[in-house]
Length: 370
Ligand SMILES: *Cc1c(COP(=O)(O)O)cnc(C)c1O
Image (cartoon, rainbow, N blue to C red):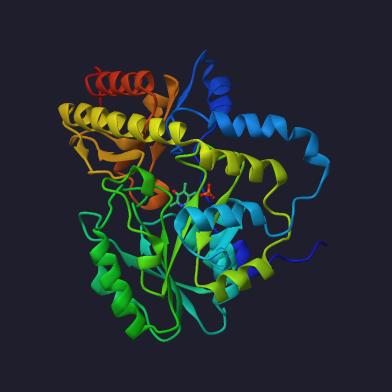
């Protein structure tokens, strides 16, 4: 008999990723599939990053340098903070896991996040066996700061907020976040407020420098979205120096591989690609938002590279998802986020956005609907 898994592992609900293009192409025998399910970059990968990968391919036999010092230094300069505050990970997912493992004692502490929220926070919390306190969002999907504060106590070590939020696209004003951080510092003096800023580049007006945030705040960033490197897995965080140091010591020494590091370094210099991405997303977001509203859908205002929406009364979100899937369009049902009546679509290239809106119009006007 093999050994029994831990009870908390047996109970675990797995992360539900978006479906892959190849899966759907084969299953429905389609020539072309458009994926608007995982908030990937509509323009592909940064061309400078692609070139860097090709240039450094022959270095694949070497181990990366421990601590990714060149990338850490460059990120520190770009954000005007000390390099001792930067930790780089195999996607921001790895950093979320490290934060929980290094800060939260399963015997004593808890972490606080929203319901619904990006599912990695509660899933990694459960894997680590820590108490996860979920605080429902307001009905308009904004954060319920009063209840978040009420949920936190002297044993709270982490509070996760996603700004802009996934899956709603909501982004609170920065002053509200700062005010919340100050109140949190009093109520839960040992808690770090982690702002997951995976989608910050798509918010209007930009974000103020990290250095201006209160001391109990850390930020999480990723190369997966505006830099188009989701498949390479690079994310980073800017944290209080002592916490960043602890994470480095717990991180597997080579979790960010040599090609990913070179690609990330090059992507940081690819201003043209990043600007083209942001402008493609902003104009596509406007187009999809207006297009869905014209089809009588309820659209959540979004500061991210996706839009969450609800169908007009009498239409079923699950059926809509399936209808689009069979026609080669993958979007994201939100059942795993406890939002069975909502759907999320990533902003694509202009032709992809049009194909999505055309399919939506045809779903909503089809004969024999139930
Ligand atoms: C996409 C996304 C990330 C990025 O994760 P990586 O592991 O860096 O790819 C982080 N947080 C949220 C909320 C996301 O939606």
